[in-house]
Image 1 (cartoon, rainbow, N blue to C red):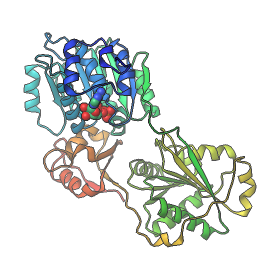
Image 2 (image 1 turned 90 degrees about the vertical axis):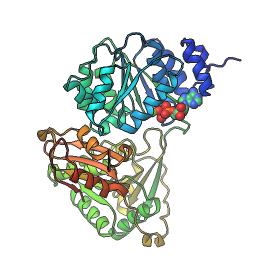
Image 3 (image 1 turned 180 degrees about the vertical axis):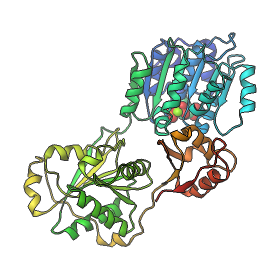
Image 4 (image 1 turned 60 degrees about the horizontal axis):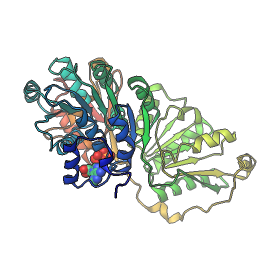
Length: 458
Ligand code: ADP
Ligand code: MG
């Protein structure tokens, strides 16, 4: 019996359809069922679905369906954040294309020598899958032409933007005819995605696969404290109990923010303060290190926290009750985004009960975790930030940094986190367990033929 999830309901070439069967793809995944009809109809589509939801086949079938195999020139381009992901995507497309003769899928990624890539390009390809940095370089060297491209895919777009590929992506898109179809896939849907979609897509239709989690919810807890010491103690206890990767602690004054951060650091937490008394560079670095998970606690004033763009925080703590209910709602709204459940804790003293009552929510005093937790070792952040003494002024780009870190004796691309290239510096997060390898790789090899000073930001 046919179900709405049958691939056979799609107007797919029979070869592609038969091959799906032999791959054991019995039914469309939800993101495929939602996006494929639109993709095959030639629409620009933004697809949101979590990892493993089958996004590659969704756009892969779209590209293959409209490909003119006899015209041996690049017709589709897929941009991916890392070499590993580009390889995965290329392999999935090759699998899907098995039934169609002579389709050539070429990967172009950093960390590999140019020569062979140029050779392959001279032999021709239908579909190019690669990382933005390397593809942009091929365009500059004029070894790749995109004049006949009619499909562009931005895969894992959120991660590409995290890795600082915005400029490279823009440069590539400029070289692609505007009467193309543009497909964008992303696990999350932060505001930068909406912004890029608005610039490079035509009336995109947004489809998101229903996530299996229930609606995002924020669970609020309230803890009564009687002194500053108790406040600090409560903070340490919650951090020790939940061991969150990212906690934002709100204070009402700059002085409190600094003092709380200093005390957390004294107790061994990976924390930083952010407030208006710090200079721009200190503020930028704190935000970068928090956003890339190389510190786990950021202690902030409301004003300073505005610069923070993070999808979902594990925990928000009101070290003091906000002066205004609206501010409170704003603070706690930073947790539990993107379908995840969130947690917010508020400390209050007798003096603050009035402010608390204005929040017009059920307030029950919760009990703090057991004091014995304070003796447990403190969890180290999963990522470490490296600071490279070179940035836009030195013509360093995110792709150069990815290329410099990966490849022989380097680290895998999926161990690289956020990359920020500032005017004179760059910051890159790498998985903490690989930081020594990463440091050595950048120190021994050069970035774009130049040696840059690099150190761990701490
Ligand atoms: P995503 O990009 O959304 O993270 P992938 O495209 O990598 O997910 O797909 C995850 C896995 O699911 C892959 O191994 C792929 O081969 C498989 N897959 C995709 N679509 C189907 C389907 N309709 N039926 C069965 N397996 C599928
Ligand atoms: Mg994918």
